[in-house]
Length: 336
Ligand code: 13P
Image (cartoon, rainbow, N blue to C red):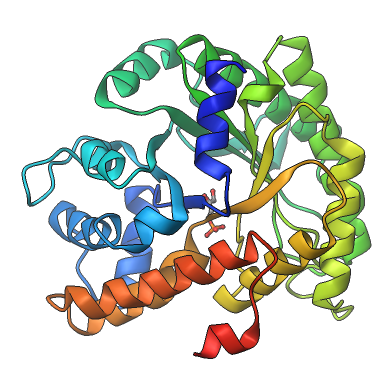
């Protein structure tokens, strides 16, 4: 077993999943202002440290994705944030892309940037304790999109990023996110997501990336948020498995889904059914941002000094997601 494969398995085995706490300062500001909390470096750390020191970390969270600001911060106990995370048994990770920018010659689409100087930044993050990384490519569906140009340029960037990350001794999370925005059907999402993922693996293979040392972070197969053709959770799980079975090479150890705007319960229920119906060898778990933090953030904003109630809320969510990652979640357990 390679060192990278061991790290990947440590993050996603036994029902453990990933806490995506890597919101950029811009995104975190939106999240905090939505609950009437001022977005300062201190407040961003305050909320995140409460999550990172909760009991749910030990039992449920195998990895935490951080943002550059957070990985450099010191917790109230004097420990660095990566140390705080490692001491709970989870692996510290870091978002290394610098964001999605307009794609030249297809300006309604995005290409993710961040390759320039990446090798040096990776060394710095490794020295700070990171052992895995994230890079997100983003695609939207409409009549002519995603274009071949967007599919190919984002796959190329994801592959170059992955090769550099593995060279630096870390596991790359490869995140091609096909957005839920729009009125497309689940079938459109299945077709486009499959095309996007297949192209990513074509490029990863070309760039000689060790597929046993990556984690794929895709969207689930869902109808667009404005679509009138809703499908059942069972159908979401079947289509999602079909997509991954046909587009992901067997060497990949695991898949950690993003929540992408689903509610907490929806993201949990869908993951649970994916695991119940999983007829692949892939570990299927979560790498949720909003679907792990939303309720905790709301509770915290009402009384920021009440750590216990915020942690209880987060612990419950993490526990439900970890049950779902094993196909053991039920509505009764959710409402207990
Ligand atoms: P969501 O689960 O909120 O989609 O966030 C996951 C993530 O890391 C997106 O890049």
